[in-house]
Image (cartoon, rainbow, N blue to C red; front, side, top):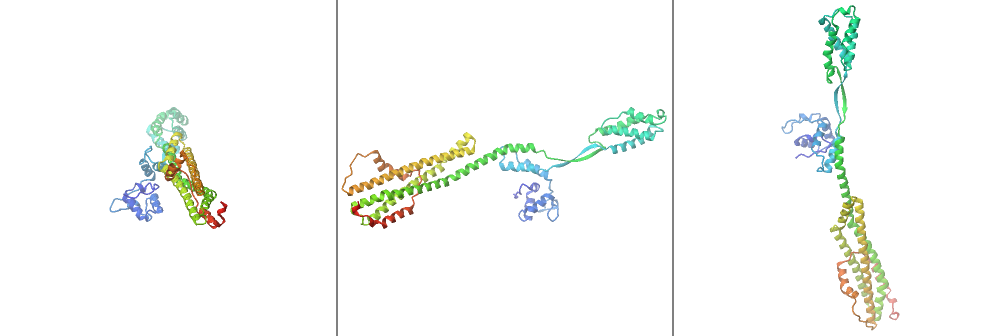
Length: 441
């Protein structure tokens, strides 16, 4: 099948496929200037008419007029809901490209030509009717009277015609039947004058614009809703495409904040307790401080990573499960407004993240308390104090069983622990370890 040319080449697109293939090849692959010349003139740049071409021994092809080609194109596309946006837009443009045409119509009666013809008719009829001695001036007056009446498209008054001749001719009452002459003129010319396309009428050529307003309006009534729907769907897809990136940015921001808080907790809470515990056991200068700090720092980093992983998992589930897309489309169905539906979905996304962040912060607080409890217990044991045994509480059960599972699964929250921050903290304590003395604790 031949490659179709752009829509603007209405005439060329009516040609057989083998001719279109030839034109594309001869134009160097579809040069627009080349094709436009053929479209407009029906001739190749060499001047050879297209209709003279014999391609592969096939008969020549003659281009139809541009308007005819456009009308053929218009017939290929229905104006209904089954037509695509692209088809309707192409049809609308074709109507706009449809040019006006000239029409030649009968105009007003050519009075001069009519008078000339009636004069000859009268001159030929006077001898035939046996009318004698007619005054030339009176005859011209009668002819003028008949011409003026007929040129207006109305029958003339035959008795008045006869009276003009009699009154202007000496002894006119005895010179013949002037009424018969007038009646012959009326009978001969009135049918011709009464015919809108008859003789003695001038020819008027005028331009007529194509009547396309109704067709374009029908296309618009179908096209506009389709365009609106497509634009709305594009807005929806654009919004949904931003969700993963937006979620990741928020997660990273939360991770950085959580990492900062973990760093402060490590510096202000855990480190002093680790030093007290080692000091109570007399192991502060044994090298255990470095390993203990590294162990606790690593644990805090894992906590932040686990929380971040949980948040990312929840975010992926929301996207893959089309949670926000479903909320958006439900809102759109209810309101009919795309922007309102997107705003609703955005608010729900923000609310979900706020709850997830809050839950993650609560988890981080619980883990902090757990870490402090472990260090306090270690200090108490080192000082020879036995912790009071109590019946395990619900909180204890949560710490022992629920918390590890929750951490493994991941909680919807954001996090990001800064490794550089922790390394700096570790380095500070390692370089200043000689400042700490057993007697200080």
